[in-house]
Amino acid sequence: QTGLSLPKYLQEEELTEECKDKTLPTILTCQKNFQAQDSDIFLATTPKSGTTWLKAIGFALVNRRKYPDPINHPLVTNNPHALVRYLELEPRIDYQADNTSTTTASPRLIATHLPFVSLPESVKNSACKLVYLCRNPKDNFVSVWQFANKVRTKEMGTNPLEETFDKFCRGVNVYEPFWDHALGYWKESLENPQGFLFLKYDDMKEHPEIHLRRIAEFIGCPLSLEEESRGVVDDILNLCSFDTLSNLEVNKSGKLSSGHDTNVFFRRGEVGDWKNHLTP
Ligand code: A3P
Image 1 (cartoon, rainbow, N blue to C red):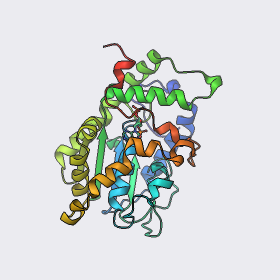
Image 2 (tube, helix red, strand yellow):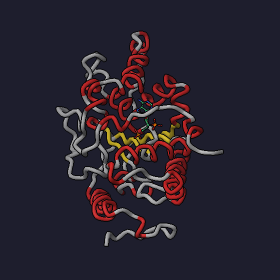
Image 3 (cartoon, protein in one colour):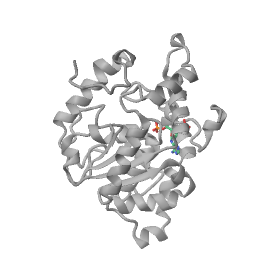
Image 4 (tube, protein in one colour):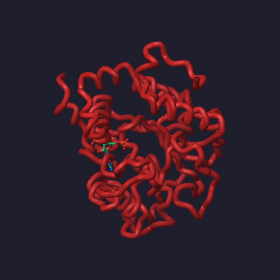
C-alpha cells in the first residue's frame, strides 16, 4: 500500500495501525517533497537516545547571539521539541528559511529519526551538516520501554519488558533496527567527516564541554575567545542540562502539538540505568 518493501524479519501484522496508516505515508511524502538547503543542520537520533538534549544544545548554540540571556531564553518557556521540529513528522511544515521564526530561522535546524537510507535524496545530495547522537542500546531500550509505558493509557496496561525487548532486538519499529540505524550513520561519518559528526550520549554525559565545542565547530559556529572568557560553554550546558530542563514549568506540565505531555521526555537522564531493569 505504501510502496515500501518491509525487511524480511518484520512481519507486516506487527506494525501498528498508526504506523501503517500515518507514519509510513508521512515519511514517503517527506522523502518525495523535502528540499534540503546546503546551510541546513540535521540532528539525527533513534527515539530515546537523547534527542531532547541534542535539540536544546543545537538550538542554544545556533541562536546564542540572538538570545544571549539564559534567563530570557526561548528554552526557558518552550520545550526543545517545540523549537526544533522533526523532518518526517511534520512534512507540511514550511521549512523555507524564515528569520522571524524560532523554528525555521536560517540555518534551519531540523531533527530526524529516519535511518540514513531513508533520508530524502535532497538531503543526501546537499552539503548540509548532520549530527548523529547514538546511545548505549541497553539504556536506549530501557528508555524506549519506559516511554512506551508512560504514553499508554491506563486501559492499555503496561508493555511487558520481555515482549518489548524481543521487538526491539528484531527491529519492529519504523526507526529500527537499532544497529542498522547507528551503523548507517557511523559509516557515513567515516566516509564524509565534513558532513557527519557521530556522537555518543555516554561520552557527552562524561565530557559535555568537549562535545559542545565539537558540535559548535562542526556546524560552523565555533566559540570565540571572547565567548570562552564569558563562560558561554557553561551557560549553554547549564541551560540544556537535565536538571534545568526537567525542572522548568513548561517541561513539567506543558503539552506539545503532537499531544504528548512535555514531561514524558525527562526521566532519569543517566548512563547505565539498564542495570536496574535487565539481567546481564
Ligand atoms: P531516560 O529514559 O534514560 O531517562 P529522547 O530525548 O530521544 O526522547 O530521549 C529521552 C532520554 O533522554 C530520556 O532518558 C531522558 O531522561 C533523557 N534526557 C532528556 N533530556 C536530557 C538532558 N537534558 N540531558 C540528558 N539526558 C536527557
